[in-house]
Image (cartoon, rainbow, N blue to C red; front, side, top):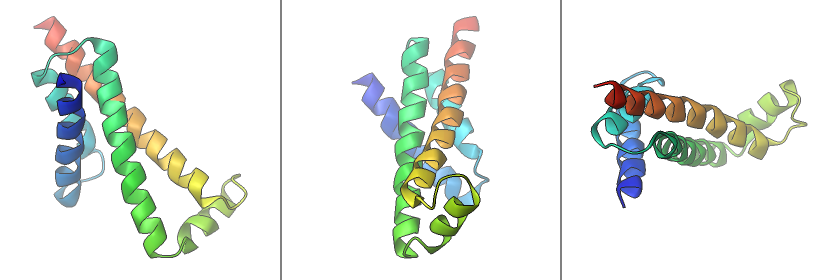
Length: 114
């Protein structure tokens, strides 16, 4: 139950921070939530990863569908993805998930040192 609350809280805070702050503010949200809600280190990483991965995947998919995959297809041709816009969206979510996961792990490790 605490894991689910952490995931939801990280996703909501990251979305709210993303409206007004730079993209890396998601790390602040993941760090703060896991520093306040104590988990084992693996669960902290997983909570941050899952929250940001799902958030960024959803946001990137919505943006991609709204512009009919025009930009993502062109960018996927520039990268070695063969024009696959879904794969580009997945990679975007993976990068965000890793940032969120490591920030959450850092928050969990900070709590251990106190």
